[in-house]
Image (cartoon, rainbow, N blue to C red):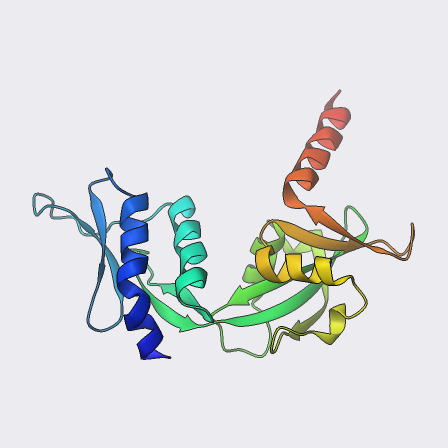
Length: 200
């Protein structure tokens, strides 16, 4: 871990988060052991378990990438304390069993394993059960490159690398041989339409 990078940007990061949660009665503190912790602003409460919402955790991750390049926040079991850990990236290709398409995303993780964890892959693609998809292939992304995606346009690759939570690259060999960039928002709307049509 580059302690210099963490120390250099910790105050700016804490200020951004505290501005974001201003008025909540909670503040973020940076400790000398390089951990960050959510605490009550006053000592009137004894419950220290300040558990951030999913939305706040997403904001923490977003700002973490901005201030601590190459690191991700690793949360404790409660979720009120986190610390920087080196980021690993995998390009993951899954086959969607319902839609019959190959889907590609970039998984950012703090795991040091040689393969991505199944639960992380499911969460990344928005699946609830492993029966909804099959992992076809994965590749560790080193130096911002991945041989698995050399055939797609640079703009699509960049969208995946920068914002894989909101974008997916899809490929359907039964319809055509080209890749397409899909916004998660558009995909959600498409699935809602299919569901409404099935109900009607």
